[in-house]
Image (tube, rainbow, N blue to C red):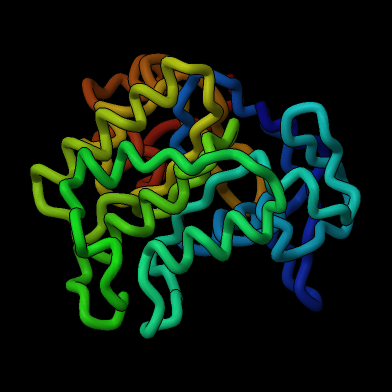
Length: 240
């Protein structure tokens, strides 16, 4: 679970987050949406410890973010474009992550098996296709059974079969109680996966609630149409 209260961040005179309140619940998938410049990227960076808020609090599970990196052990992160060294393999990176964690947990490679990565996991990332690198990215994010998953455009570059494998895994993670936060521009995909929507506008939670409630609120039959209406300003926003 992630609890966010009064989160504020500015860069110079530009306010990026303006007292953001939100809760992401374990065992549910939350879609993080909003127009460009709404504060989504900054919010994710703060959750990951890559930026510090000017004010407010964030708790991941029972740990309040206080500058200590310990809470990150609970998080699996799948960036949209992973900037991994091209000469390393997926297995090399897995070993580095295990060493950084400093525990004896055996990594879970069931997703690599489901993707049928085979010896691709042992090849330098620089010689792999974009889709293969994205599969490695997903495997690394989930290898240490995180209680929180943060995924940024997770199906980018994946073929339809790999998309199905990843979606099934995310639904399984949800079933085991993982808190899943996804950003994606593929809204029909989120319709299938997401339970809740956190819609940011001008650095605030303009909508925080269930997907079905958002559809009812906007009078639209799908998440894609509901979000399009919000982006067009065709429905009054309110936090559910």
